[in-house]
Structure formats: structure tokens, C-alpha cells
Image (cartoon, rainbow, N blue to C red; front, side, top):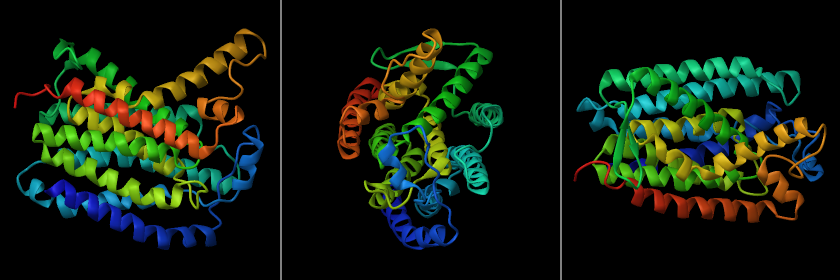
Length: 328
């Protein structure tokens, strides 16, 4: 099956790329700057190479060409559109990482700059999928096997909100060793299963490539991490997570399979709102949630296992919820 080949190729490319890229990043002194207001023990990670997301981005690119060539010859470009959409976010993240390294700080692009770039990418991707006939304005409701028909303008606003929100939620989840990687692997496998179940081989190819690339990246990213994915990788992952959902026309599945992302970003929002409301008091020990749990005694390994395991269970439930999306 082509998606199995895609997984294997991506795994191999990412594994080899890691052996080459990490020493290069060290020589370039492309080290991560750690937040001073984060957990104190995280300061030991100062200088760990970042922008490691380049490993799995390259792996996905090679895999979808190698395994998806036949799909291209048949005129199926859906997997290429998803990759290019995610790549735009990866480029935004790369610019952000580069700015951080250039100024030796933990701040890159400004929030308005990132928002406008992400919003433009979301609108362009939605319009493209609509033009190519891959996307409808019928919003499928998981578990109920029904649809809510929306005007295209309303759907576009909804899509842009979901895409930008998802990308930044995944980015926020990337706060400890292996967490965003471990959570996104079962999400990508969920998309493989759904796409294969629907007979959408082109989408299965890119989802399998993501799963393979991340599995190899985890070798280097698991605690203690030898490399971080950086915004280059986390924004790319966010683009893939929402891009695949929209390519399969099941965007409402994102809060289910991505519940960890949602909880992480909500914890950050609650913390900021509560801090302002109470003039300095904190709802959590530290936001986002993984830092709150860290300060409560959870190890990075425990956080990885619990969050990834919970996501795996949610992905199984989500599959049941969307398995009747298309007639077999």
C-alpha cells in the first residue's frame, strides 16, 4: 500500500536527516533561548539546537513525491495542497526562529505579523480546496452523521478561525521534550486510518508521511531532547493537523483528536484572563497546562505518556464518530 511506503520513506529520510542536521545546527550555534519565566530546570536546555522541524518537513516532502507519484499522474493533488499549506506555516515559523536566533532572544515575529501571515494562508487554502472541489460548505457533525449547511462567507470565517487557532494551539503544546511530537503522531495515524477507510489514498499518503517523519524525529526529540522542532516544526505540524481535517472535509474532528491542543491553549487564555481580572493572581501555577503539571511534580516523560495516550484514545473515538462520513 502506498501509505505504508510513505511512512517508511519518511521515517528513513528523517532519521538520516537528523544525523546530518543536528551537528550542522550545533556548528551554526542555532540554539534555543529558554524563557526566563519558565520552570527553572528548563534553563539547562539553553542552547539545545532548534529548527529540527526541518527534518520531518523534508521527510514529508520526499515521501509524498516518492509514494504519491501515481496519485499525481491521476490528477489527484490534494496531498500536495495540504503539504504546501503546512509548508507556508513552516516558513512563517522558520522566519520566527531565525529572528530569535539573530537577536539571541525568545521573541521573533510580532503577534500581529504572525496572525496576518497565518490568516492569509488559511483563506488561500480554503479558497483553493473549494475551487478544486475538495471542500464543501456542508459542515459535517461527527457522531451524528449529519451536516450543517453554511453560507460560503460564514464557512470561510469559520475555517480561518479554526486553522489559525489550531496552528497556534499546536505551537503552544510544544513546550517540553517530545510533547507536540508524541501528541501529533496518533493524530496523524488517525488521518491515515480515516483517509484509507474513505479510499482517499492521496490524503493517506501525506498523513502517513507525517506519522513516519515524526516517529523518526522522536528519536532525537524524546526526553532528554537532542533537538527541538522550533516554530519551524510546530507551525508546520499545526498546518498539517488542520489541513488534513479540511482536506477530508471533517474539520469538527479537530477539537476531538486535538483535545490536548485545545486544553493547552484554553489554560493559557484562562491564566491571562484571571491574572488581569484579579490584578496579579494566577489560576494555574504556570501556563500552559503542561507547565502547571510540571510544577506539580509531573516529569516530562509522564506528561508525554499521559498526553499522547489520551490523544490515542480520543483518536479511536473520533474514528467511530466519522467513519460514516462517506458512503462505502
